[in-house]
Length: 298
Image (cartoon, rainbow, N blue to C red; front, side, top):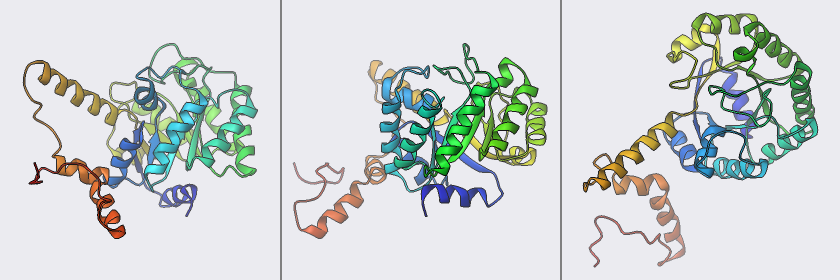
């Protein structure tokens, strides 16, 4: 099955899909190893990993696509990619879809923010007028019909700026145009989340950002509200950053970090053991040259 068909099969199961997000191949690999059926390349996380900078439109289309290829190459599970605003006018949107499809993504998110976009839970964002937002989705649907086989996640940030009624209106029109998944960003109450799923019928994505505007709800409650995908956009990035900061603080204090993955486990997860097993099929000398803790050689 293609990545897109794998995603279609997941959605056909009619149950909530947990979707941890990542910004690089290592994060994607760990998501798959943990048994999750779906991943998402977060623009926020990708900017952090690649640039060490904020998600404020600094990454170019080419950089995002290159980061995406490394992620999809690392895993077999389907991955949805963050296509931001499509990187230009409707023709740019179509080029973005073609590029994401060739890169191996299963889906793409296109949003209605003014470029350069911002994280949906930060200040300074703005949305385009309705018709421009609709043109982006029309262009995406046209590119899909022409062969860029991706599921289209249509996102609106209108709730925080114009109101819930406008966000629901846009989501309904996105669905009518052919979007596969709806994403109304940053509801602030459970009541708003209920209205979103009730008044804009379709497959909805909930964004569970710790410290963000939206209530963090357990999967069972999200499913009961009507959501089909639960995205966890920054949990892995935040956990990794905190662990690295703690390790560096220990070094600065003249100590050694305590909470470290065992070296043998690091090797296994990164594929050293599988590499060595495969290399031995071609005779001696092909094993990965990485010292083991039980190695007796000096």
